[in-house]
Image (cartoon, rainbow, N blue to C red; front, side):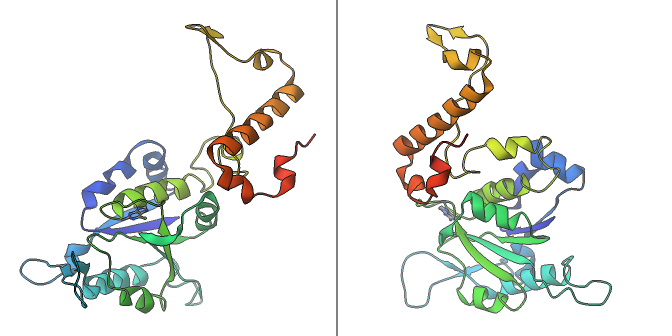
Length: 249
Ligand code: 6GU
């Protein structure tokens, strides 16, 4: 998978050199390129923002540097041309913004099947809205939010999204089994986990986990998933099919 990230703070994306995603880049499973938006701003101060029409607080990102950056990346997309000349498929333009659709595991799953993602990190009060309409000709545009709180810009959200998507690309996570059991993969929170010692500072590991009865352990873990989802995230249960919650044997 190819991922391009456009930002005015390329150094923020340095974390993508580290750990699992860093390793996947070195192995060629993920090709991540980080671009400085200011390289597409041509005045003396490399200005990328301006005051909002209609008034109001803060600044808005100007459309032109974005158009130049996104045009260049689209022209260089692995989807731009195939042997016959056209793939007919567009790269996905992912725009982190608190006014976007909620970025859930299911969205990460969908996006992990894309061949080319471009992440547009906005700052200030956001990017001129016309950029998103204009970009639809070359991109499948998706505005996505991490949750109901405000960050200073899209960079931290881009890191979270690239990690959530990248780890679902085949080969990036060494043991694909670990993707099946984790939180949100079945719409429930994960069951609690324990390791040695079995008794620690007066706190014991639940007996059943020491029993060796794999059927009972699986049933207990499922109960724990449902119970803690009910307690911590009742909103998640409302989205689920009853068969996911009912104990399967
Ligand atoms: Cl995706 N961007 C920004 N700037 N703030 C956020 C967010 C995204 N998600 C939650 N807050």
